[in-house]
Length: 137
Ligand SMILES: [Zn+2]
Image (cartoon, rainbow, N blue to C red; front, side):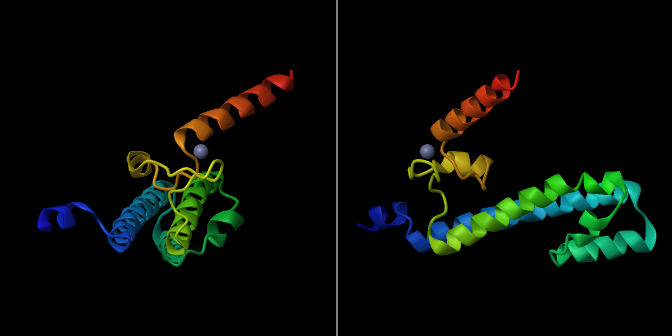
């Protein structure tokens, strides 16, 4: 009996584990963004921007006319996705494919913690996008 209990993880435990994974990823993206900032901005401005990002305030990036800084918007998008995933986790809808409602395998979530589609649906969506591109010609 004890063995069986060890094996199965409670819903709460799974949630905590996935949350940790997402927060870890979030930190990674944030650190990456800061490294990027460090490459082309120095001094007081750098500090100012970093503090703003820590607070989740991306307006400094959005409003900045520096093209290098605008590149950070991909980091921002990723952070948005992670935040959305965290919200879903809270709601209990995390890890469920938005297209077919199937559970997204944990292996996939480990690689892309903010995935919203299962592999099959993702492939289908990519195919459709490819076809739409071809239609333009
Ligand atoms: Zn699916």
